[in-house]
Image (cartoon, rainbow, N blue to C red; front, side):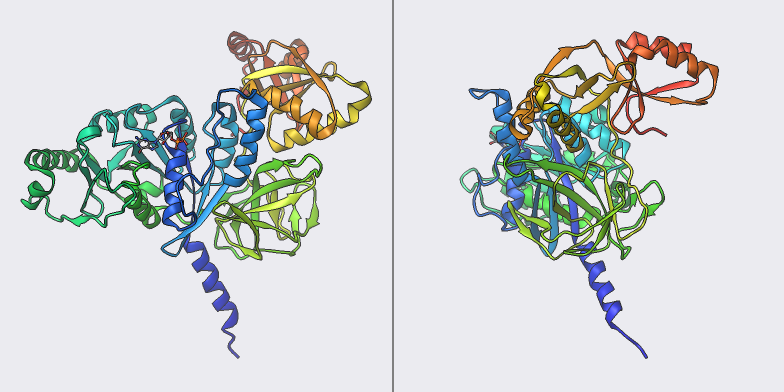
Length: 539
Ligand code: GDP
């Protein structure tokens, strides 16, 4: 007897995977990430007007920093995942904060994307934050697509910019489109990928022209459309491009070996449709993900997923948190029992959230590539894995050495329980890292930015009713310690000599708190079998 039903189910499941594109947009603040996101959502019909996506930037101004962060936290719940449908593709944009004090948030979010779009300001070129983020993507071979923005303004020469992208970001680029003029003289963009010409007109700002087909750039019609000299320049430039840059190759892009570049103006909605159309064609479907135990394929039927972000306590009266899970394989079903691998418990979720544009909705089923938001009362922490029973731990959410370190003291002895609970939960959320000194049990908070100390103090008080104070400590870097042979004399001596500087991180891993780069160097040469690492995960 033949039964077609399961096969049909499987087909539809594969189709769901195939239509998903999950990515992040990275940039230095002000390059145009928010504007581009908004224009993409407009295409998907997910929002009706410009200005609907709130900017989650930290603004310097009248409000004090922690109030600003609270405001930002409120917005970033709404913009954590922006999903929309375009040409039947389900597109999930994961928000990445551009502010450098939140770089770690961004690094963690990058573990949940299948590709990224890098936005660069045509006038400013490659900036610091872009460099750092692209480096992380490069290390992980994440497919990257580059969008050079603000072509309506005077900027750098397009070829110089391509050089800069190659050199500063270490990428190998291939232009997929090319600008005709720039700033005041900006005439339009030639789409190399589709062989189409798009004419820019200042008075038709939001309009999306379909583009004029120009298979043969030698056609004299081009001179009529853009003018003789611009046409001639474009012809020469394209000739150079075909000569100098590698041809686009989808596989190389997917392997992170080649990065296509697009030009446009997000504000004017120019070049955005071309970017999106190419993106849905070439960008990766939900990718396999490595767990400590094995590689998990998105097409596997059983559910697996991991927590990459936790949002907590937006309403201090309800100690509610939203854990963001990236689905790696299988179908996530409402009310189905899943194993929370770290604590070994089966859990069910009666109201898992999905994200659509800026709205959260309860969802019955989600597929690989999707993000679901699970309500949590404090059980999850970043990096946790959910399965249908398999013992599986997804890799790749390491802690990096913080930049700032301070002792944290309890400022209200009656509230020490609240303080520890608060610290514990804030650390699980990934706000900062906690180290406990082996010698005397004193606690040290390490953060990426100085702002976080204010946030922690404020949140401890408002959400947990606890008070803390800080005390300076001279630490340059936290180094995770790996002993080649934990039993050898060298390691024993290291531990004895460095006793005052040794601490445990929250996972119980041994950490050496070095006071200077020189100390690290000296320690490393004195104890060569004791390896010091700047991240908690190492080979
Ligand atoms: P983000 O910090 O990367 O999210 O940048 P925003 O999207 O907030 O943009 C920063 C500023 O640049 C805003 O004032 C935008 O209006 C402006 N902007 C964005 N795209 C363009 C563009 O294509 N042309 C021009 N002239 N300005 C732009």
